[in-house]
Length: 327
Image 1 (tube, rainbow, N blue to C red):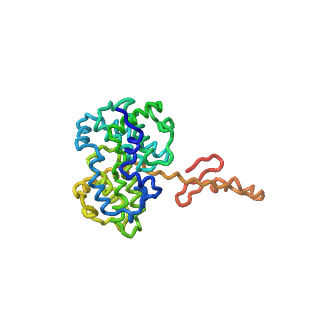
Image 2: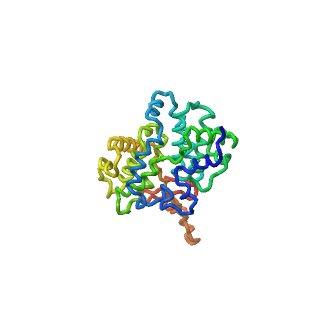
Image 3: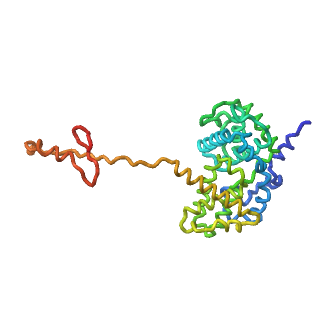
């Protein structure tokens, strides 16, 4: 049975009223990441919490990685590539998160070889779909395959994979993500808005840097967003004493146990990543002094030049002008 273009186009409206879409009126808050917290009503957040279960893989998805029926390292490699392309084209953080969300939901519903080209093709298709959802300018399908892509696919092959992903996801691409909650939670923690920009930025970085970890598949977007805001608050003296257990009161439907568990895991990974970073080595200070001697002093130069050109001052190393040797 053929499906008309109009029917498919209606699906692409993602649940909005078509009259509202074509009326030319812009909504009060058009983007999850750019909308101020004042635009977000608590009832909307409660609705996101109610719906988020419909946009995550099933509860046994993480168990498949633990039992090694799915390859966690292959998933991590795919997510790392998505993040590289996101940084290369300066895509929004939401674009990267949606790409991984589509990939996980697909892998939960369909068996796919996790080695070789199939997973790479899925990664490209998911990133392409997410970019079309969120980015004003989207690279061509060939240009999207950068940053060490192991295989290069023809556009028609990627389009077929995109259609398969859309079918498996039932065309539900407007997922609930941590970025649906992050502005609201930052406002709850800092109602004055003094530190809200920092909280949102740092929480976003923390969430994206840990998205490769399969352990976070245990948590729903609301818990991940709350944990990210709490981790960011630790870096602000005025907010570092906030009790994480109080995050449950930010909105109805939040789980204190899940938030605390996710928060502890996120803290561990943040500290672990900090330890892995190589220490900064400051370059050795080298100072060169050029001896200026007048012709009238040439007779005493041989006796004074050595002591003049090799000195130590405040433990700084000085370079011998003639040979370039240092002490």
